[in-house]
Amino acid sequence: MLGSVNSKARPFSAQHHHQPLCTRKHQIGALLLVATTVFFTKLLDRSSLPCSFTPADPITASRSSVHVTNGGDLLWPHRGYGAVVDLKIYVYDEREIDGLKALMSGRDGAIDSSSCLKGQWGTQVKIHRLLQESRFRTRKKEEADLFFVPAYAKCVRMLGGLNDKEINQTYVKVLSQMPYFRRSGGRDHIFVFPSGAGAHLFRSWAKFINRSIILTPEGDRTDKKDTSAFNTWKDIIIPGSVDDGLTTNGATLVRPLPLSKRKYLANYLGRAQGKAGRLKLIELSKKFPEKLESPELKFSGPDKLGKIDYFEHLRNAKFCLAPRGESSWTLRFYESFFVECVPVILSDEVELPFQNVVDYTQMSIKWPSTRIGPELLQYLESISDEIIEGMISRGRQVRCLWAYASESASCSAMHAILWELQRKVRLFHQSTETFWLHDGSIVNRDLVKFSDWRPPMPLP
Image (cartoon, rainbow, N blue to C red; front, side, top):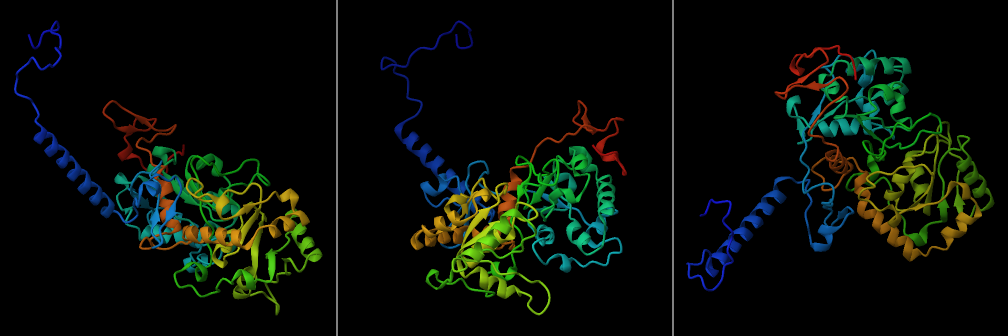
């Protein structure tokens, strides 16, 4: 009996003369149908989002590193990322939250964002502007995967718009007005801290945004602080803001020189700042002036080194030395790729962007800062021009990842940041002040539903 628990399956054999359930023609037709469906599904997936991974061949598709085609298209690996970027990011408006405008233009609102766009801290403005224009932006908080909190605090502080105490108080005030921040404990909120100070610019970061996603070029501040604000599991190292005259298509600020026409083996262009590594390089240049250039940089007066002069010096060596300064990261590392000298990192604690997919051993050198001396120059001299050309060539392929270009560009820092942000998305949100009931509703400690939370709110 068919439905009986005692019935046993009988083996199908040639002794049974039932009509076959599936003929050869049926099998071939089914396979063709499946193949056609898969083909058109992949075709639609590839054309639906321009920021998608496009497999070129079985080798490329299985790589774990990023790859840029000869046509300049960015190919991101499937492993750990998926086939396409599929994000919805809410960007807070300065008018919707009291205090946010002060973090962007100072207590009097007198600081213009264009002033904050300049220099190595310009990422705080560039990322904000790019997200405002992004097709991944949503204006509905309820459908957002992530929330971006714009602030130009480093620039505002430098220009006298807010002092350290005011910055701290204003951040706390802003956060207390964000129900979605409290819902997740800040886990789905993004902050940019573009300088060597990192999140320490917000003195109470460890109390209020220690769970949030921090975008910063700085991966270490343990030299001056008890703990580093960077967490490799939740935060993202971003490139510093390289001058647009170097990074934009058709940029003509300076052109790289052929290796045969470069005067020096290596150079260091920077101030001493009382830092041991920098002082050693300056002394080394005095002993070997024909190999290592390290001119005294003046940033004011008649002998001030202009921007073009700086890059013309930088391009005149095969290797560009990048020691740590006030913090572990240095903009010189990124600039090296655009003047096409091989960067030599002399900063032991440095963290580099997009390490999940970029193999830095193929395009740069990291040398112990404790071994700065004649040994370093001897090592660099031993490297043939052929090998140097190969490292420069590989760096040329990925340097587009250091350029903050629009989404219309086939490769940019913003594309890479979006890929990394996608890895941070959570389906479920909770904090110490978030609770939920049997019907799926989110409530606070007083059992008030999330939709009824009103600022100011106690922060998690």
